[in-house]
Image (cartoon, rainbow, N blue to C red; front, side):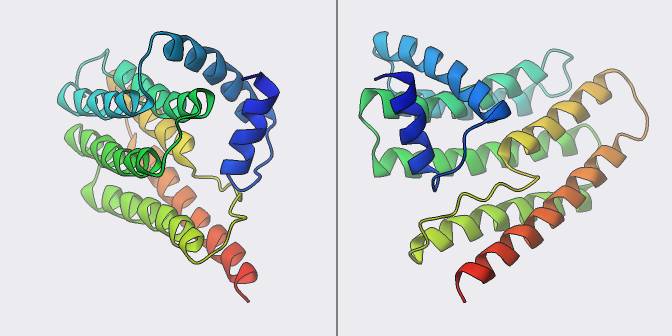
Length: 205
């Protein structure tokens, strides 16, 4: 599969979402890595499960200074598994379902590691609830027949992972008041809920 074919396929799978900037750069990297893994006969579903394993390792070793590497590996596995499915031509409904379930479990583990290092539980609870509502709204809308759900909010999964990464780095650098980063994340999530709700309301009128 050529790169342009891959990008077009990815866009269609994501509600004809535009591909530019950081997204295009990441997909270009993902395309190269996915091709290598496909040649090694590694399945996309196996990579999906490995992403969950890395998230679990992040939770177990979250207080170690090198723990953020597990977050990076978890996110990379999540980003590349879909690319592998496209390139190999083995994209399946089960694979898509598995990916979504693993994403949600991984995000719970991300939040739990932040609780483990001392972030306020009420803030984390609100963050994870709003993140799950955001993903549920998108998923449920697809179930109701809305095919164009390509809206990008300010708190998509890579952004959520970035907040986790920043908080962990600040924790290991002994920065004070890292709770304010969590507060900012919470605000991002609330704004995202409002954004996607307004978008869906306009579509379902």
